[in-house]
Length: 185
Picture 1 (tube, rainbow, N blue to C red):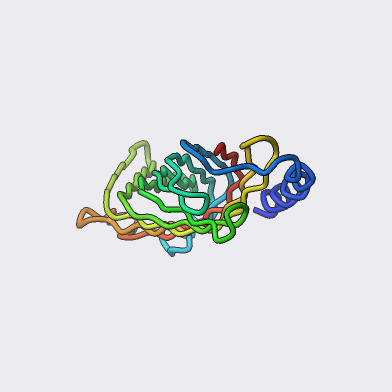
Picture 2 (picture 1 turned 90 degrees about the vertical axis):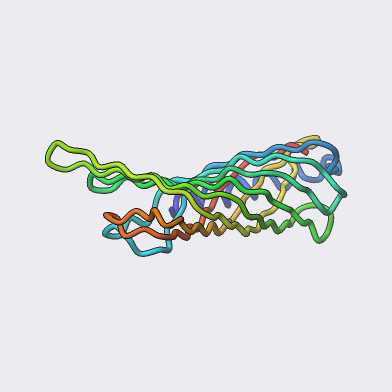
């Protein structure tokens, strides 16, 4: 996790001189994706906390300060023969209080959990669905034209329907994602 944060900081600082090239605008279709680390803040399954995460988001521009879209985000972890994967499909709104740079986002939609556990030659698999909510903050650092380097911090909260995953004691999940992505506006 420290390595990911250090890389994020170095890339962010390296992109600062490029941000003065040309004033990027939010217009029309936009798309972004990012990868990084995630930390599960829910206590379950013998401490399966740190993992990998990422997102893909896209949508349209309402104004220089408001974007609407959809996002697929996820987190995964493999620990001691158990694999956990959490994902969300959400509608999002992104707000730029000063038109460019800093943004806040939030959304709601559908969640999915998938787990598998292998022991003594047998594998137990479970899946569940439910509600997904997300809030986040990020910053668009212009690296050329309408291409931006985008560090993000997102909080994902998922509650599962009555089909909770009993063997792993999972009925909800909360993950902090720290990602570095690229966004085209």
